[in-house]
Amino acid sequence: MIHGWLGYTHTSAAMAALLFGAFVFPMLKGTRLHKVLGYLYAAALLATNVTAFGLYHLTGHFGLFHVAAIVSFVTLIAALVPVITRRPKNSWLYLHYKYTSWSYIGLLAAAVSEAAVRLPRAPFWPAVALGSAIFFGTGGWLITRMKDRTVARALLMSHQATKDLLPSSPPA
Image (tube, rainbow, N blue to C red; front, top):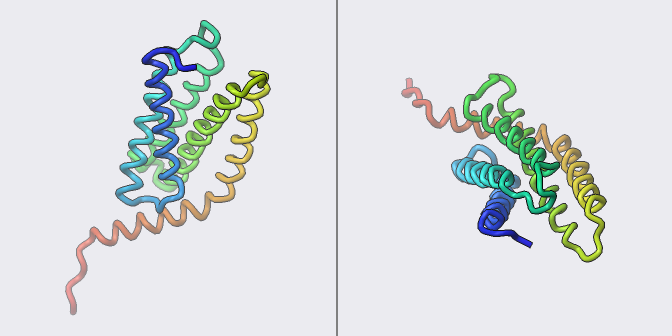
């Protein structure tokens, strides 16, 4: 059950982040569309995290899900800073890939956990633990498996974009 306008805002922002992330992850990296959808994902996830701190219907106090929102926020910042600053010079792209991927895996785990606890007679904590374990385990495996290919393709796009911006040398 969604409680009040804050609950609707939280849910809507989370659903938007899920949708933007679903489009961003399979697409070619470094394109203008990737950047626009990436920033929309970040804004939606930020709104999800901020609104989480106003929701206390589950426990009545600061709890595990508020800690998860802090971890999500830190992961989001860790994903954005390297891509915005292009630092550290030799690993910014890998750091962006790693932390963006983990932020989306965390969002998926939260969504599955939320859905699982709404199943009739589902025991709350086992449903949360199982949903999270499945997504974090599978996500970690995929992040590791796809890292080299994804980062290499993004670097290729980055180099091509840089080359396209340089003036061509005049014919001799």
